[in-house]
Image (cartoon, rainbow, N blue to C red; front, top):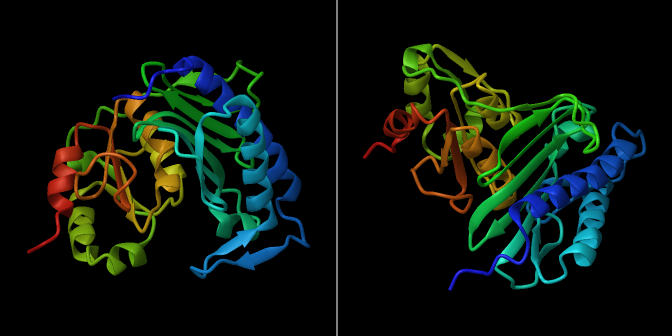
Length: 272
Protein backbone atom coordinates (compact mmCIF):
# COMPACT_ATOMS: atom_id res chain seq x y z
CA UNK A 1 0.00 0.00 0.00
CA UNK A 2 1.32 3.48 -0.83
CA UNK A 3 2.26 5.72 2.05
CA UNK A 4 -0.56 8.16 2.91
CA UNK A 5 0.29 11.77 2.12
CA UNK A 6 0.27 13.30 5.59
CA UNK A 7 1.61 16.59 4.29
CA UNK A 8 1.14 18.38 0.99
CA UNK A 9 3.99 18.52 -1.51
CA UNK A 10 3.99 22.30 -1.23
CA UNK A 11 4.42 22.18 2.55
CA UNK A 12 7.22 19.62 2.21
CA UNK A 13 8.93 21.83 -0.35
CA UNK A 14 8.57 24.84 1.92
CA UNK A 15 10.17 22.87 4.76
CA UNK A 16 12.99 21.65 2.49
CA UNK A 17 13.82 25.23 1.59
CA UNK A 18 13.82 26.18 5.28
CA UNK A 19 16.21 23.29 5.93
CA UNK A 20 18.46 24.70 3.21
CA UNK A 21 18.46 28.05 5.01
CA UNK A 22 19.65 26.29 8.18
CA UNK A 23 22.31 24.41 6.24
CA UNK A 24 23.62 27.53 4.51
CA UNK A 25 24.11 29.28 7.84
CA UNK A 26 26.27 26.41 9.09
CA UNK A 27 28.26 25.74 5.93
CA UNK A 28 29.08 29.38 5.25
CA UNK A 29 30.21 29.93 8.85
CA UNK A 30 32.84 27.21 8.35
CA UNK A 31 33.74 27.77 4.70
CA UNK A 32 37.43 28.48 4.09
CA UNK A 33 38.27 28.46 7.80
CA UNK A 34 41.98 27.93 8.29
CA UNK A 35 41.37 25.65 11.29
CA UNK A 36 38.56 23.55 9.75
CA UNK A 37 38.65 20.10 11.36
CA UNK A 38 38.90 17.32 8.77
CA UNK A 39 38.51 13.58 9.42
CA UNK A 40 38.89 10.48 7.26
CA UNK A 41 35.93 8.09 7.06
CA UNK A 42 36.30 4.29 6.81
CA UNK A 43 35.90 4.52 3.02
CA UNK A 44 38.93 6.86 2.99
CA UNK A 45 36.92 9.89 1.90
CA UNK A 46 37.21 13.17 3.85
CA UNK A 47 34.54 14.62 6.11
CA UNK A 48 34.69 17.96 7.89
CA UNK A 49 33.18 19.30 11.07
CA UNK A 50 30.93 21.36 8.80
CA UNK A 51 29.49 18.24 7.12
CA UNK A 52 28.57 16.80 10.49
CA UNK A 53 27.23 20.03 11.98
CA UNK A 54 25.10 20.71 8.90
CA UNK A 55 23.49 17.28 8.93
CA UNK A 56 22.88 17.52 12.68
CA UNK A 57 21.12 20.88 12.23
CA UNK A 58 18.87 19.45 9.52
CA UNK A 59 18.09 16.34 11.56
CA UNK A 60 17.17 18.42 14.61
CA UNK A 61 14.70 20.50 12.61
CA UNK A 62 13.18 17.41 10.98
CA UNK A 63 12.74 15.74 14.37
CA UNK A 64 10.57 18.69 15.32
CA UNK A 65 8.77 19.31 12.02
CA UNK A 66 8.36 15.74 10.69
CA UNK A 67 8.85 13.38 13.66
CA UNK A 68 7.18 10.47 11.87
CA UNK A 69 9.47 10.58 8.83
CA UNK A 70 12.70 8.63 8.44
CA UNK A 71 16.06 10.17 7.55
CA UNK A 72 18.99 8.92 5.48
CA UNK A 73 22.05 11.15 5.67
CA UNK A 74 25.58 10.73 4.38
CA UNK A 75 27.23 11.29 7.75
CA UNK A 76 24.86 9.65 10.26
CA UNK A 77 23.13 6.96 8.24
CA UNK A 78 19.49 5.94 8.53
CA UNK A 79 17.09 6.64 11.35
CA UNK A 80 13.49 5.45 11.34
CA UNK A 81 11.68 3.14 8.94
CA UNK A 82 8.92 5.35 7.54
CA UNK A 83 8.41 5.26 3.80
CA UNK A 84 8.53 9.05 3.79
CA UNK A 85 12.29 9.51 3.94
CA UNK A 86 14.40 12.65 3.92
CA UNK A 87 17.71 12.07 2.14
CA UNK A 88 20.52 14.49 2.96
CA UNK A 89 23.98 15.22 1.62
CA UNK A 90 25.14 18.02 3.94
CA UNK A 91 28.01 19.04 1.64
CA UNK A 92 28.19 17.62 -1.85
CA UNK A 93 31.71 18.52 -2.94
CA UNK A 94 33.54 18.27 0.38
CA UNK A 95 36.94 18.20 -1.36
CA UNK A 96 36.12 21.54 -3.01
CA UNK A 97 34.79 22.93 0.27
CA UNK A 98 38.01 22.05 2.07
CA UNK A 99 40.12 23.86 -0.52
CA UNK A 100 38.02 27.02 -0.69
CA UNK A 101 36.53 26.19 -4.11
CA UNK A 102 32.90 27.44 -4.16
CA UNK A 103 31.47 24.49 -6.14
CA UNK A 104 29.70 22.63 -3.31
CA UNK A 105 26.12 22.43 -2.12
CA UNK A 106 23.72 20.98 0.41
CA UNK A 107 21.36 18.44 -1.16
CA UNK A 108 17.99 17.81 0.50
CA UNK A 109 15.30 15.49 -0.82
CA UNK A 110 12.06 13.93 0.32
CA UNK A 111 11.52 10.44 -1.08
CA UNK A 112 8.11 8.77 -0.75
CA UNK A 113 7.86 5.04 -1.44
CA UNK A 114 11.24 5.18 -3.14
CA UNK A 115 10.35 8.07 -5.45
CA UNK A 116 12.00 11.49 -5.00
CA UNK A 117 9.17 14.01 -4.69
CA UNK A 118 11.02 17.12 -3.46
CA UNK A 119 14.55 18.31 -4.12
CA UNK A 120 16.57 21.35 -3.03
CA UNK A 121 20.17 22.04 -4.03
CA UNK A 122 21.63 25.05 -2.24
CA UNK A 123 25.05 26.42 -3.20
CA UNK A 124 25.51 29.52 -1.03
CA UNK A 125 29.12 30.16 -2.03
CA UNK A 126 27.87 30.46 -5.61
CA UNK A 127 24.83 32.47 -4.51
CA UNK A 128 22.47 30.01 -6.21
CA UNK A 129 19.71 27.65 -5.14
CA UNK A 130 17.66 25.24 -7.22
CA UNK A 131 14.52 23.41 -6.19
CA UNK A 132 11.75 21.28 -7.63
CA UNK A 133 8.80 19.18 -6.53
CA UNK A 134 6.48 16.77 -8.29
CA UNK A 135 3.78 18.74 -10.06
CA UNK A 136 5.17 22.08 -8.87
CA UNK A 137 7.88 22.78 -11.46
CA UNK A 138 11.56 23.56 -10.97
CA UNK A 139 13.15 26.89 -10.16
CA UNK A 140 16.44 28.70 -9.73
CA UNK A 141 17.10 31.62 -7.43
CA UNK A 142 20.27 33.68 -7.50
CA UNK A 143 19.58 34.55 -3.88
CA UNK A 144 19.86 31.66 -1.44
CA UNK A 145 17.37 33.19 0.99
CA UNK A 146 13.94 31.56 1.04
CA UNK A 147 12.42 34.97 1.76
CA UNK A 148 13.87 36.70 -1.33
CA UNK A 149 11.69 35.82 -4.32
CA UNK A 150 12.83 38.60 -6.62
CA UNK A 151 15.41 36.53 -8.50
CA UNK A 152 13.40 33.31 -8.84
CA UNK A 153 12.87 31.96 -12.34
CA UNK A 154 11.42 28.71 -13.69
CA UNK A 155 13.80 26.16 -15.20
CA UNK A 156 13.47 24.51 -18.58
CA UNK A 157 15.84 22.11 -20.29
CA UNK A 158 17.21 22.90 -23.73
CA UNK A 159 15.49 22.00 -26.96
CA UNK A 160 18.63 20.57 -28.61
CA UNK A 161 17.70 17.40 -30.52
CA UNK A 162 20.99 16.17 -31.98
CA UNK A 163 24.16 14.96 -30.32
CA UNK A 164 26.19 17.07 -32.71
CA UNK A 165 24.76 20.21 -31.10
CA UNK A 166 24.84 18.89 -27.54
CA UNK A 167 27.14 19.66 -24.62
CA UNK A 168 28.02 16.93 -22.11
CA UNK A 169 29.57 17.02 -18.64
CA UNK A 170 31.18 13.77 -17.49
CA UNK A 171 32.57 14.88 -14.08
CA UNK A 172 35.64 12.58 -13.91
CA UNK A 173 37.44 10.46 -16.47
CA UNK A 174 38.75 8.27 -13.66
CA UNK A 175 35.23 7.48 -12.53
CA UNK A 176 34.26 6.27 -15.98
CA UNK A 177 37.53 4.33 -16.29
CA UNK A 178 37.01 2.63 -12.93
CA UNK A 179 33.52 1.62 -14.07
CA UNK A 180 34.93 0.14 -17.28
CA UNK A 181 33.02 2.62 -19.44
CA UNK A 182 35.71 5.10 -20.48
CA UNK A 183 35.77 3.92 -24.10
CA UNK A 184 32.02 4.44 -24.40
CA UNK A 185 32.32 7.93 -22.93
CA UNK A 186 35.16 8.86 -25.28
CA UNK A 187 33.16 7.64 -28.27
CA UNK A 188 30.16 9.71 -27.19
CA UNK A 189 32.49 12.67 -26.64
CA UNK A 190 33.56 12.44 -30.26
CA UNK A 191 29.94 12.70 -31.37
CA UNK A 192 28.78 15.65 -29.26
CA UNK A 193 29.48 19.30 -29.85
CA UNK A 194 31.30 20.02 -26.56
CA UNK A 195 32.63 18.04 -23.61
CA UNK A 196 33.14 19.46 -20.13
CA UNK A 197 33.93 18.19 -16.63
CA UNK A 198 31.91 20.62 -14.52
CA UNK A 199 31.62 18.21 -11.61
CA UNK A 200 29.53 17.58 -8.51
CA UNK A 201 25.88 18.69 -8.45
CA UNK A 202 26.40 21.61 -10.82
CA UNK A 203 26.44 19.71 -14.10
CA UNK A 204 22.93 18.38 -13.37
CA UNK A 205 21.66 21.82 -12.46
CA UNK A 206 23.06 23.12 -15.75
CA UNK A 207 21.05 20.44 -17.56
CA UNK A 208 17.93 21.70 -15.75
CA UNK A 209 18.83 25.27 -16.72
CA UNK A 210 19.22 24.31 -20.39
CA UNK A 211 22.95 25.12 -20.50
CA UNK A 212 23.99 21.47 -20.93
CA UNK A 213 22.15 18.60 -22.59
CA UNK A 214 23.80 15.56 -20.93
CA UNK A 215 25.48 14.96 -17.57
CA UNK A 216 26.54 11.68 -16.04
CA UNK A 217 28.90 9.87 -13.71
CA UNK A 218 29.54 6.72 -11.69
CA UNK A 219 30.38 5.89 -8.05
CA UNK A 220 27.37 7.69 -6.54
CA UNK A 221 25.15 7.14 -3.52
CA UNK A 222 21.42 7.94 -3.23
CA UNK A 223 22.20 11.12 -1.28
CA UNK A 224 24.25 12.34 -4.27
CA UNK A 225 21.26 12.02 -6.60
CA UNK A 226 17.88 12.13 -4.85
CA UNK A 227 17.59 15.92 -4.67
CA UNK A 228 18.67 16.30 -8.28
CA UNK A 229 15.90 14.16 -9.75
CA UNK A 230 12.81 16.34 -9.08
CA UNK A 231 14.68 19.40 -10.33
CA UNK A 232 15.77 17.82 -13.61
CA UNK A 233 12.48 16.07 -14.32
CA UNK A 234 10.27 19.03 -13.40
CA UNK A 235 12.40 21.14 -15.77
CA UNK A 236 11.41 18.73 -18.54
CA UNK A 237 14.44 16.47 -18.51
CA UNK A 238 15.00 12.80 -17.78
CA UNK A 239 17.06 11.05 -15.12
CA UNK A 240 18.20 7.44 -14.83
CA UNK A 241 21.28 5.40 -14.08
CA UNK A 242 23.78 5.12 -16.93
CA UNK A 243 22.14 1.75 -17.61
CA UNK A 244 18.65 3.24 -17.77
CA UNK A 245 17.36 2.24 -14.32
CA UNK A 246 15.00 4.69 -12.58
CA UNK A 247 15.70 6.52 -9.35
CA UNK A 248 18.83 7.23 -7.29
CA UNK A 249 19.45 3.63 -6.21
CA UNK A 250 21.82 2.19 -8.81
CA UNK A 251 25.19 3.87 -8.28
CA UNK A 252 25.33 6.07 -11.37
CA UNK A 253 23.51 9.02 -12.91
CA UNK A 254 22.53 10.15 -16.38
CA UNK A 255 20.55 13.37 -16.71
CA UNK A 256 19.55 14.77 -20.07
CA UNK A 257 17.19 17.22 -21.70
CA UNK A 258 14.93 14.26 -22.45
CA UNK A 259 15.19 14.47 -26.22
CA UNK A 260 18.66 12.89 -26.15
CA UNK A 261 18.23 10.43 -23.29
CA UNK A 262 17.67 7.25 -25.27
CA UNK A 263 20.45 8.10 -27.68
CA UNK A 264 22.83 8.80 -24.80
CA UNK A 265 21.90 5.53 -23.10
CA UNK A 266 22.55 3.63 -26.31
CA UNK A 267 25.91 5.32 -26.81
CA UNK A 268 27.02 4.62 -23.23
CA UNK A 269 25.79 1.02 -23.07
CA UNK A 270 28.47 -1.38 -21.90
CA UNK A 271 30.13 -3.22 -24.76
CA UNK A 272 29.72 -6.96 -24.70
